[in-house]
Amino acid sequence: MKSLFNKIMRTYLAGKYKRLREIDTHPHETQAYWLRHLLSRAEETEFGRIHGFSEIDDQRNYAKHVPIQNYETMKSQIRRMMYGEEDVLWPGRVYWFAKSSGTTSDRSKFIPVSSENMQGCHAKSTWDALALLYAMLPDASIFHRKNLIMGGSLSPFEEFPETTYGDVSAIMLQHLPIIGRPFLTPDFETALMNNWEEKIERMTNICIHEDVGMFGGVPTWTIVLFKRILELTGKDNILQVWPNVQVYTHGGVGFRPYRQTFNEFIPSSMFVYQEVYNASEGFFAAQDRIGAEDMLLLLDNGMYYEFIPEGEWHTENPIAIPLREVEAGMQYALVISTNSGLWRYTPGDTIEFTSTQPYRMRVTGRTQQFINAFGEEVMIDNVERAISISCSTHHARISDYTVAPVYLDGSKRGAHEWLIEFAQEPLDIETFRKDLDKALQDLNSDYAAKRAGDLALEMLHLIVAPKGTFTNWMAYRGKLGGQHKVPRLSNDRRYLDELLLFVSETPSMHD
Image (tube, rainbow, N blue to C red):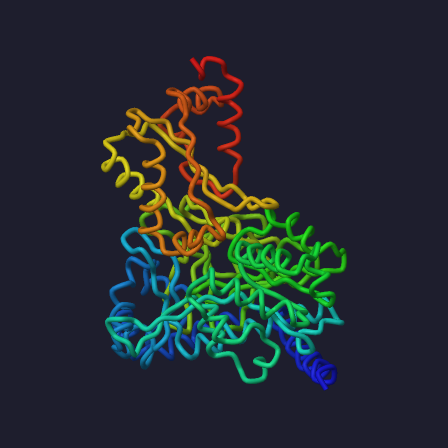
């Protein structure tokens, strides 16, 4: 029966795939439709009336009427929506909010997820990603075996309990159609647990007995789960536990550093990795070719896209261009208008188009310095505030510093590694390290979640750099001067490893 159902779903998804390819032939008309539709739907909202949505007839007028937005400029309106106010950014009442890492003044940010956004973007794009997967992998058996999803958790908004917030993955699980529920593992109660130590243990005990064909989630937690599965079963790799597993759907962080680890977990040349670009704000793209390092931009999912060229990123009033004006090989900051009331909103991601026929792209980073190697989304402001708090507590002063990830490798857990040059060292380096880690957890909820129980991330590592390290290194690289700055945060280890090598090979650094 399941095999027959999978065949039926393959036929259904083939129709969706055909529709996706038709959209590829008229992308600009599709985007123009969504701009008109979004403006029409929201013209009677508070935001729509203030910005004259009823008078806007094209992208150029839209840009004139509505300035570029970010979370800081919209958070007061979003907050009112969380208290139940209607018709603020989107018509009607919004009950669900996706929680993700905070901004300059907030530990967390909350993104509205309207019913239209839930169904017309997140759910629809999930189906589109499945259609692309079945086209890549004709013998896919997603609707024949179990699918393991590493979901988040949900909580009522304490100040207004009729509103619910949580990870967007948890919101989607809560609204999973009945048709998909028999193919999901673990059970909903386990999948939505808040305590990750208990969740990993329960998932392990449940899922080792299932015939899993596909799994999805952030690499960090997936690795933690796989290690526990192998510990409990005594098996050498995941294929010995799930011999029919075919696909891993991943997104949220760069996957390249994890590929070798996953190859060891799943030693098969036939296994398929599908990257997706889904965020709290929307589901934007999905990989449509096996082995490719880019994704197809999804254009018919309740999103209107604009793009800020690299030279405009840090200007006071950046100019964004429509899809028809982008060029392959150029860097852009993403701007979105959505069917949940985000208007010309910048999530902070930077992308590069690899093709414009069709529109394929890859995520290249963030417009701010950041570390997001494990889904923790630590921003420069989080780090600066944490170090300021710790220095104040310990009467320390810092000359310079840089931070990079320590990637998961075999039995090693991930971590952040700090190289700090002190102008005045704290009396107790170990206590300083613990307090710095605690301060960062207090400032960034995603980092705190990854640190819970030391399961995914262990306490930050701290290396004290000899005095003069950073200045001497910049001079060695010919980068002294006000226009050259030491990168505080990096999502890879290039700068940190260069600095550590420089210290080890420079005798004067040890005097």
